Image (cartoon, helix red, strand yellow):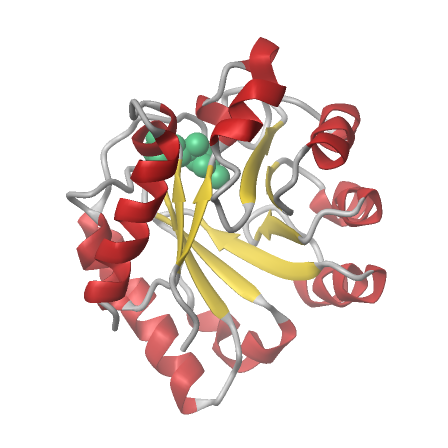
Length: 221
Ligand code: DX5
Ligand code: ZN
């Protein structure tokens, strides 16, 4: 299997020094971009114009996480900008399978995200429609929250189901991932780790990325 991926979240970056903060994470696998609309979550970040500039500036491909209402309408635009992956929330999508197919047609990896309280069973028979599944390990909306270990059985069940069905899908975790929580997420089946405060809050972001990757590899499912 591929080495674990670490995707720093620029929600924890300095929004007026974005270029410098993108350089700090040049060693990352993907840049995780949290788009929030103040409706799906009680917080507001940025939209397509900012994401397009980040895309043009970043040496690392973008992993866009849409915490917005009506992703059926807005998600394809992020794929058209050139994001490597676009993940929308299952809770917000009217036609998740149709939307995933559309994202793939445009050329992005199609991702679907689940809030901590959202069950995963409805996805089991559609796992092959997605390139990545994001299991939220906090309630979406803010960086710096505590990891919720009660989300791990859902991740484990999804990862086992994907193995059983031979579905080539990445499993992401997002929220509260740090050197003290990453092992349990890796053991439960995650292969892609979003980390905001643990990377941008470290004195050397590159070292933090490397340390997280090494811990995840050591505790692989
Ligand atoms: C939360 C976002 C996360 C957030 C993670 O809604 O989706 O990507 O930036 O931040 P940390 O790693 O600080 O929990
Ligand atoms: Zn996120």
